[in-house]
Image (tube, rainbow, N blue to C red):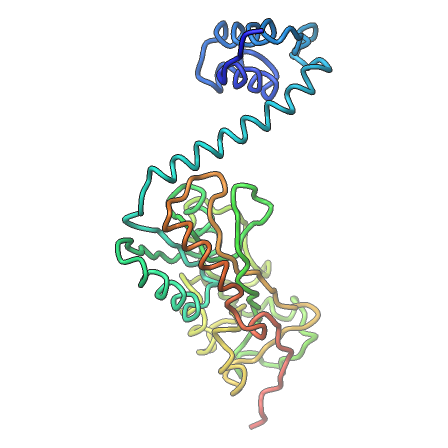
Length: 313
């Protein structure tokens, strides 16, 4: 039995994965006859019938099914080896692109980045700010090496490091509502008042909306700092990260309306990068550095405060 080639294994796997020779040829950018010949040669060399060609779609024989499991493992190892070789060839990166999302508390995260890049003077930090689903889009379209934001953890293209929890608290300014703010305020009562929301910086937003009260008048702003100012000035109400408003909640300049109908939301802040892309040595060092310092947020910023009555007067 002569040895088979990596190309023949790729063709066999593509036929199995795509259900036919034509689809496999299109994925591999090869001709139909060349893929057919490669798989036929593989079968001859092995002395096995791997594919059942009797049906409309090509299927696996019992031997083919067992062999394909081993092929998938080998191809996966080869992909990882290629990624590793690419990383070695990259050398130290001239620049790392980091996107901070609107849920990122700047002081602790920037302190970490400052300490790390102070040790890597040859690599320039390129920082960008994005909102809502914008950070995901930058990462998935290869416009960022790393993001710090909430992460869709069901997306297998991403890997992440949990950095802590961020509570988003529904708040109003004193006097904004013509009735006392209580924990049992209903959406029907709030529908008459302007809600402030963050604009999604993604070119193609993947979410319809975040914390939106249907039917209420709405204004939009580019970030939470602007949103906080509008709410403080009694122009709207909305959800704000607790780490931004702890002083205002303490001294009564902002009032929580969290309760049964507006419970607030706790999001998990994470550093995330592509799982399916090669990373240079400095990017890997940054990843390990963040993992070694996680979590970075105080537990209190991940808790929703209850309603506190404004002082009379």
